[in-house]
Amino acid sequence: RRNAGILPSLEDLLFYTVAEGQEKIPAHKFLTALKATGLRTGDPRLKECMETLKETLKKTSDGVTLDRHLFKRCVQSNIVLLTQAFRKKFVIPDFQSFTSHIDELYENAKNLSGGQVADYIPQLAKFNPDLWAVSLCTVDGQRHTVGDTKVPFCLQSCVKPLKYAVAVHDHGTEYVHSFIGKEPSGLRFNKLFLNEDDKPHNPMVNAGAIVCTSLIKVKAEVMNFLKNMAGNEYVGFSNATFQSERESGDRNFAIGYYLKEKKCFPEGTDMTSVLDFYFQLCSIEVTCESASVMAATLANGGICPITGERVLSPEAVRNTLSLMHSCGMYDFSGQFAFHVGLPAKSGVAGGILLVVPNVMGIMCWSPPLDKLGNSVRGIQFCTDLVELFNFHNYDNLRHFAKKHDPRREGGDQRVKSVINLLFAAYTGDVSALRRFALSSMDMEQRDYDSRTALHVAAAEGHTEVVRFLLEACKVNPVPRDRWENTPMDEAVHFGHHDVVTILQQYHDKYSPPARADDKESAEKSLDSLL
Ligand code: GLU
Image (cartoon, rainbow, N blue to C red):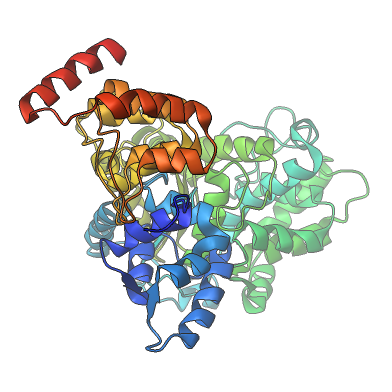
């Protein structure tokens, strides 16, 4: 028997979760379990854990197995994130079942053959019409990706919402909208046309995007913003596209001169260099994967989920999402808002940047475009997505049972595990314990070391939890853990005198009742206490 007082730490609890009763964990088991939560081993937030893991494994005898001590050492620097992940606390708790649905939707759209690849410049015409990719990143940084997600392509018009966000982040709403409207134009995106006040209709059409480009203070900073939105994943530049856009850009030059004539730019603007910058921004390259992180930054109120860095102000993000919602999909914007009900922006390279606010960012990419200029497969995917999940802005989240709510699923499993019981006892979360008791969880469950919730609560000095377990749940007050220690031993060791007092009352009078009585009396006292 060892001394009382070796507490299960969060690291211990994580070990039990992953080990499932074994004494040691093979590293691949941990990594597989980690990936199932949606986290990537390359996630910048897990850097320390992964580095320590690599180092630690080198020193083990077989190069793969971790005992509890080594495991704890590996996870301790990222324990908060890992705990959240394994307790299914992420926005999509059952990530694997969610992504299997996504894969089905991907396959469904893959079969579509319609549409034309844009061919006004060779850099776009060269793309194979079969290319098709979907990537997503949740606000907790859960990642999923299917298809040709590592092929670079140009953002083209998908950069419009991003640079608008940067402009608002820099200058605020009022200033930006003293130059640009907020209304859908009802006209093709590259029309030479202004609203009644001689301003571009909105920042999602070319005229508005060109004025928006002129508002950006430091050109060189835009690339940094984009990089940060993408969590430092791939952001490149296609110089060939830039040159072609400039050579074939007569319409945009016409718009530029018209805007200049109507005094749409801030004073002192050099219109032709603004156009150059506009073409350059269109020529910024992403992959489906990196762009999904950009979309996720918009979904997450301007904080990049995988770095935790604030990139854009909440104001800039909210404005951007509003205008994407009403104006993001060319002349299909109204229909898209109606059927899909999510902010999105498409581009001529075949990208659709889609945002499920507060949940996830998605990038769909496939070059063939429909008559209005939107990716055929992308539109199909977006439509199918909200048919299956209640992501439409006006889906009722409480009563519309026909659709899946991936934000809630996995909830059942969540309450079952002994680990969650011990977590609640550890943190003194009485209301969580009440819920467990109500869902008729066995409140005497033991962990790998035979410790109960009562042991943990006693060691932590959570009197309310101790009282609840003893009075309402009628748990055994003298369970013995692997080292024969009782909750009393823990309370004494840690000097929690009030816990000792409570436990003493129960110690003396406890005798395990017959099973039936036990349940009945437990139910009775639950009624009175819950
Ligand atoms: N470079 C294109 C233009 O400005 C962008 C087209 C688009 O993606 O909508 O005309």
